[in-house]
Image (cartoon, rainbow, N blue to C red; front, side, top):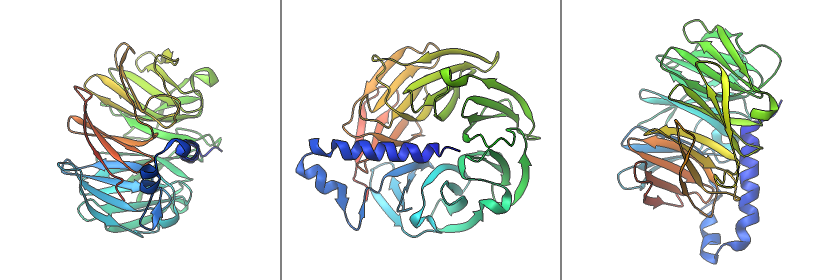
Length: 339
């Protein structure tokens, strides 16, 4: 069993350490602020007016006002996130859920205050190392790195069903993507599985093998296509969801992909957040053609990304938030370090 999300975190942290030699003295001081070094936001959730960041290691929550970029609230020691490594996150109405991959638990927070509302022990509901979270309607779907797929009530956290769709071979379920036709795609080590939301039954599996799937970390859908980010090979795989065929794999120096860790579909484009230092900070391609549209640079690797209205927010390992206009690709503001 491979802890893919945690591998991403360790790789990016290693790159940051290697890059410190090139930092200015001011940069070094920014990296060590307050009592917490490398707050390292690994999850971002937006409700339009505010943006919540969830930090790895410290488990701290920060609420950022999107209109100004100012931190308006810091929540420490929420639930038992203090020593955890959160990965997946998803929102349901006035609450949001965060998965602790290492500890194996799920936590629900109030989006208005950041208060911890409940903790769900993964072992009690059949979840092993939760990684991917996706809210669909009133239900929370959880994919586990231990090869589990579980449906919970998004409100109460109670168990609805344990799906057998991804088998019991221990193969990782690393990320989830919901599409409009009532299907849920589960990303695995070497394939993606389509699951019927109403029943949890497997509909089909698209196997790509090591040629097209190399430590996949993120999945997003656009224009009846599935786009999958591959961590180890620094590549992007495109799958035709209608036919189940692999359309292409994007890699190479022109794209400058480097350990892609997050994907977002917006305005007909796919935004790719890179967790390595060898390429660009963000690579943007056309969702229909795969053509390179734009590249955004930053001296520090990305750790998380989310969409808020027409803007894209990207967190980096310097504990900053960068807001971009998704139409013009212009940087609107840089917030941080946010600690």
